[in-house]
Length: 138
Image (tube, rainbow, N blue to C red):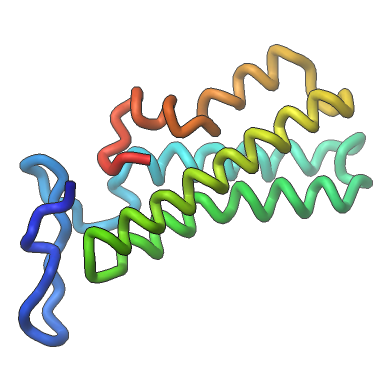
């Protein structure tokens, strides 16, 4: 849970949310954002492969889903309440689940093999993010 110092009683004042005892001053410091961004970069590489790139619909869908997760973590971080931050983390989790579905679809279309699907899926799973110490629960 975010520390109560996150909320400010003074207009324009900015207070960093805290997770545990360590203050988090940038959304890039959250492990969940780092993992979501890592997955995003891996998917961006994946859709550039010659045998996948022609499938524009698939590429657009998976790129949109994977880009949404770290963006929602960042947007939620900038909100002024714990409830709003939690809502954006929930949206990010939904985007990761959508991406997980698309990764499975990539396997079904023979764009990737089972070992690559398995390697990418743990990062796209909210449970995996939590197990790896997200810093902000996803």
